[in-house]
Image 1 (cartoon, rainbow, N blue to C red):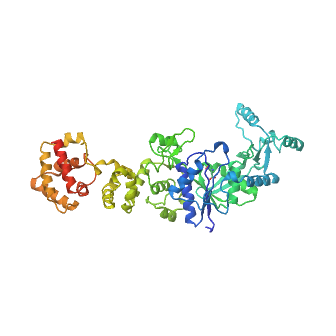
Image 2: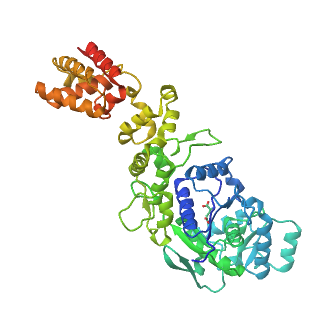
Length: 505
Ligand code: GLU
C-alpha cells in the first residue's frame, strides 16, 4: 500500500448519526491507522433542504465519545480545507465549468413540471422514463436547443440545472471494489444525473467527486447504499481526467430479524439504541436514547460495530481499538448484510466491564451513585466492584442493588413463603453467635466457620445460606454471601441478621 492512505468519513448533517454511520467512520479510521494514513471528517451539507440544526455538532461529539478522532476535518483543520462543503461552492462551480466546456455536462432548462409530465406520459404507456441518452434530445437543454434559444433563456435568467452527459455509445463501466471485486455496469442504463441544482448548489455526486479528488482521497470507504452511484462517479473521474480512488462499499446493517436495513423504528420496537448519543429532535423535542446514556462503554460499542461486517476469519470476538487496527483489512469485510443482535451488544458491554483493572470504575461508579457513595473509600468501592462486576451488564445496575448501601427494608415475600421455615430464625440466631466470634472477619474465614456450623448441626447448605442471604439483602440473588458479609463487616452483618429475625420471626 502506498504511504499516502487518505480516507474520509463524509456524513450529511441531516439528523443524528446512525450506528451504521459510526461503523463507516470506524472502518475508515481503522484502515487509515493500519496504513499510517489520514482519517478525514468532511461534512456534506450541500442539501440545504435537509439541513438539521445541531447534527454536525452531534457527529463530532459521537466520534469523540468513541475515541475515533479525525486527523483532518471541520474541527481538526488541515491543509485540504475547508472541510464543510457549503464553504467550497466556488471550487465546485469551477470544476463544473470545466465539464461544461469539455462537453461532458449540459444545461437543462426543463421545469420539474415538464419532467413529471414526460414521466407521466411514458408511465401511461407502461414504460419507465428517465432523463438519459435516449430522452434528452426531446427535452429542453443545451444539447437539444439552438444557440439562440439557449442565449435567450440565459439572458432571461431562466433557471437551469446542469446534468452529466452519459456517453452516446453505451459501454461497460467498471467499478473495482476492494470488497466486492469488479462490477460492470452498462452506461446505457444510467441516467444523466443532475450535478448542479437550479439553486446553483452542487449535488452530492459533483461535490463528493470533486472533494475526493481535491482532498487526495485514496480509498472511498462508504455504505453499500452508495454502490449504485459508483459507476457515475467512475465516469465523472474519467470526464475530469482524474485518477479514481479505490472503492470499498460496506455491507448493510440488518434488522435483528435479518429482513431489511436496521432503522430507528427497530430500535424503538426492540428497546435498544440506534444512535451513539441521545438526540433531541430540534423540531419535535423528542429524545431518542443513545448507547452512551444507556450505559454502554464506547469500547464495547466499537467492538460490537467492528464485528458487524468484518471478521478476522477465526472465532475471535474481542478487540481493543489497537488490536482492531492491527487486524483490520478490507478483504475481510463481508459482502452480505450484517445482522444486528441487540443481545450481543449487551454481551460486549459485559465483557468490557469485567476485563481489565476494576479500579478504573471506581470514579464512574461514585459519579453514578453520588448520594450513597460520595464519601466511600476507594477500598470499599473496589470491594463492591469485585463482588458485583460479574453480576451486572452495565455499571449503573450496581446502584439498583440497594442492599449494598442500606439494610433491606423489605424481604422478598415469595421467597419467605417458600424458604423461611419455623426453625429458620433459630438457625440464624445460632449462626450470629458463630459469626460474632469469627476473627478475622474475612470471606475465607466466614465461609469456613459457616461450613463448620452446618456440619456440627448436620444442616444442609440450603437450609441456612438462602435465609442468610434473605436476611442480609432482602432478595434471593446477589454476590457471594461470604464476600458480602466481609464487605458489611461484623457489626452490620450481625445487626442485619438480628433485624431480619426480629421482623420475620
Ligand atoms: N454524504 C454521504 C452520506 O451521507 C456520503 C457518502 C459517501 O461517503 O460518499 O452518507
